[in-house]
Amino acid sequence: MSQTRILIVDDHPLFRRGVRQLVEMDPDMVIAGEASNGAEAVDVAGSLDLDLILMDLNMAKMDGLEALRQMRSNGIDTRIVMLTVSDADDDVVAALRAGADGYLLKDMEPEDLLARIKEAAEGKLVISPQLAAILAGIVSGGRAAPADALSALTSRELDILRALARGMSNKMIARRLDITEGTVKVHVKNLLKKLGLRSRVEAAVWAVNQGVS
Amino acid sequence: MSQTRILIVDDHPLFRRGVRQLVEMDPDMVIAGEASNGAEAVDVAGSLDLDLILMDLNMAKMDGLEALRQMRSNGIDTRIVMLTVSDADDDVVAALRAGADGYLLKDMEPEDLLARIKEAAEGKLVISPQLAAILAGIVSGGRAAPADALSALTSRELDILRALARGMSNKMIARRLDITEGTVKVHVKNLLKKLGLRSRVEAAVWAVNQGVS
DNA sequence: CTCAGGCTACCTCTTAAGGAGTAGCCAGGC
DNA sequence: GCCTGGCTACTCCTTAAGAGGTAGCCTGAG
Image 1 (spheres, rainbow over the protein chains, first blue to last red):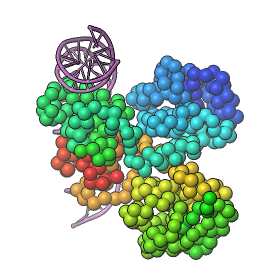
Image 2: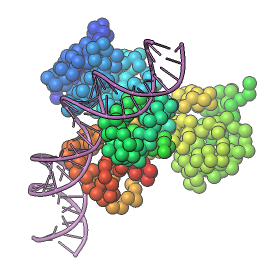
Image 3: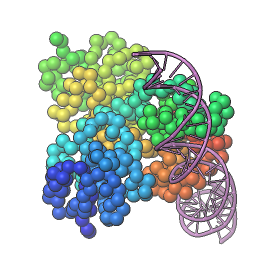
Image 4: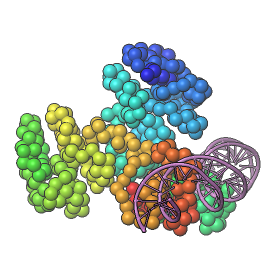
């Protein structure tokens, strides 16, 4: 059985070096490549034969979340674990929803981190324990978007969201509100951005769970 | 400042004794009462002046989840932490959604458990670290749920419908169920026809309103 | 055995959806 | 006056979704 081939994506060379040293303490794992930003990562992810990608979130050229999304939409199903300093719930949720296979914080103990990386390579979903409460809060609240995100919406966007919560298409909404379908699309796009959601289906589900009506 | 008054609810006397010993190692906490099933717990929860309730899930007379719900609907806002052996995702999610302030597993290290109980008493939401991955999986989008009485649908179609109720795209569903996107489309098409709905958005909204999860 | 139903996978084709950008109009605030 | 935010309406472009069809494979009922 061959080694686990890992790509590390981070804009700090020293940090990459540290991770490389840590990972290669295990003879079963090898750093197959490095990238210093998301764009590079997307480029090389397809060509290198990888088993696991460790990627930072905050990077200059293209952040880790965007890189993750592009890889997934490029059909790359390599296991991808975010390795970052951000313990913001939005980041965690966004990464997991975008298809990350794990979310680890950089302040973990090295031995622990190494163990988690091995688990990730074996197919497990790995999460820093500190984030458990955050995820629990999200689950218990039944939300994907922050609860107060509703107040960020304009009244027109709320009209649209209510229509989405009834399963209506853009065309139906347009007829109902007596505006063009194109304008409905604009409102849908804007409210999706405000709520941090990716599709009308997510918006509809979220709205129903919020009791929007 | 007075002691934290705790009610322990579990149908195993020996386990209750163990918890009592552990908890009372801390002079700031005291076991104010014990109950051996959910019904008893609901009875005494109102009369004892409690700061925290530690409750098992699996009990003969009334299980912990039902007891939790009854207490909450009785207006009892005491902090309630589930202390159980079940690491089933359904149980975790159900408890948190029903208003639990924490979910701890019985196989935790005693010292760790004691620390978590103290945190819970202080108002924190506490979760056993082992459950992080489960919660993450739920947040990221997919998980099986108890069977349902939507008799017209096949089990696979129910899988798809549950995924729809979480707002997932065909591609995400395909990845999660390890089938092709084309096959997902087939299932979506068939379930839409069976349910008499016109789009995945309608199906998602309908499913959420039906309580499909 | 045959047959039906369920799951899988592919095909083609059309429409729906969504991102990014530009822009006009109108209200309210400074 | 100017400027901002909200609503409207386009453009161009890409991807997602859904309606048809065919078909192989497997399992359980008869």
